[in-house]
Figure 1 (cartoon, rainbow, N blue to C red):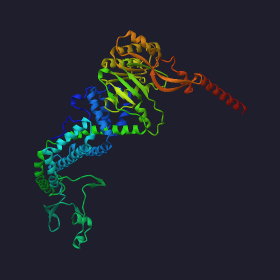
Figure 2 (figure 1 turned 120 degrees about the horizontal axis):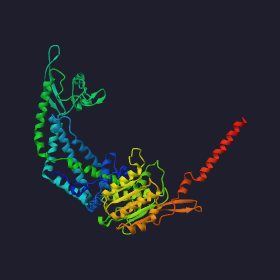
Figure 3 (figure 1 turned 90 degrees about the vertical axis):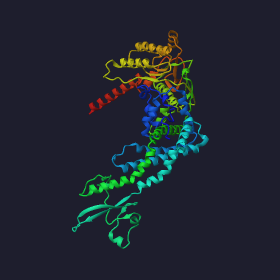
Figure 4 (figure 1 turned 30 degrees about the vertical axis):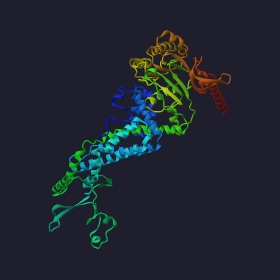
Length: 572
């Protein structure tokens, strides 16, 4: 009996795998690449982690299925350590799926299959033992089902027969380590003919004829079959180790026949093993190898969560609510990519601020305004990353969370203008927005960052109002991070003029005004509130040294230096 092809630690059944991947812009706009690299156990699994994150499922039972596995692993460090070791065994088993280069060499095919079956048996036994030893500590359906499937395999007649027979089959192939060849010579010591004399269970080793006559063989010679001359190693050519000789080589007058005899001898040796192996053709290690990526996904996630906990940041398993509730209630949310970035020792550490986010009856469409560099983009991307993590069945960066799944996450972030755009930047933005409305539903999440900022403010406001009203009509959850304070101020008017149950509200990145209003301190706290009357562009200009007063000082300083230099040259 083999592992069920449908068995997975991520999907309860093939029917639960969604057909639509995430939107094209999501990966770039939310910087999912950093998230993937931080979760992946090592680079070889990055593509798989990316695919899991971007294959967004709305099935709450699938999400909970994964959450249970995560809880089991986080609560059982010993199990995690053992799975790390077994993962390497599965990787080694996977090597046997690669097609060998000796299709016509029966003996080597048999040896290859025997090695695969031995590795398969060892891996099944090891994984089964680990899960059995975990006992009642395993509460997840996924790990319990895997344990039961492995139990069924181990207790099946075919597995028991294979396990019992392998110790007898393997030596029949592997014990042939060397062969004695007899060569007849003529009077001038030229080779006339050759024949196969005997097989041995050890390799030939170097030993001179004198040492054999006087019993002075080395320890190495005594451990192997002594030869009467030096050993010429076919594996080494110009210092490079690689096999150069096969049974079909033709290098001397009688070598073709000799090698043919050798092939026949080896085929005869392998025939009993071939007959024995026919009983096990139904055993396919592929279905066991399919678990490799699932296990690696969880082990990488556990490793990332442990790092987060070590630095004292909160991370929690969200409660998954029904799809139709269209709810996102998260306390103390922070941008997980910002934290992962700070794990890099070359990056300056900054304080990471948590925010409470509530999409629900009181507001599902946020018009987010505030000062430049006040955290609007960080907040917007954090919401998308939390939603991705939650629907992947992973804990989220927050103190608590209750989240409804979304059928898709659409992003529309400002792009750099490209000269080859026929319609210009605004036309390209309009095209991308229209594409979103062609696919989004009331169960979607839409994130806009500085959209429609490529035209005059009056035109931008007019276009933005229509887009936001369409959000309300559709019933989506959305964040629109913008400098259009007039848009945020018009929330009540937009709600009144448009039918829908997704209320539009204003949320603001708060600041503290100090130094008699000449300086502000960004708090990165984002809360529902009316928009501020200004974007604090003057403060930003002052910070970068380009306020009028600062530029005036720069110009005057240059003039003073020029006058002084001129006076010096005149004096000379």
